[in-house]
Image (cartoon, rainbow, N blue to C red; front, side):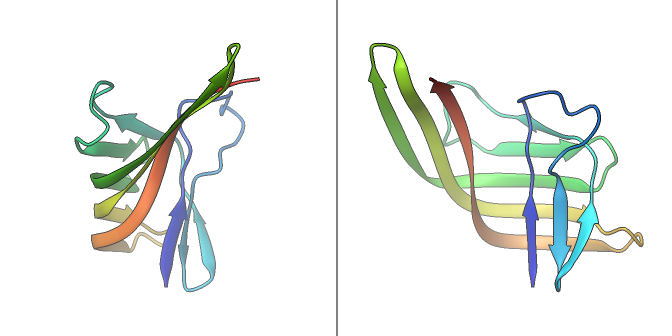
Length: 113
């Protein structure tokens, strides 16, 4: 069983990040993850890379669950985008896994409280 948790673009992640790979109940820490995407079209591919080369994935969107709730400037705009993930990930021991057509989501959220 494989999964991951990644974060990018918020807070100061100099000391730590939430970026992890999980395989068969074992966690594998990866470093910083960066996102390249078209800011005007959330349905174009999202390209993720890590500075340590251990997370190289492309998410091809299939559905954007867009929410836009604001009242007097308070609220949230969120693109929760579901799609297929393809690429490679590297475990702590150097093993490379090829990921093909894994269904998962990512989101881009703009919160104002």
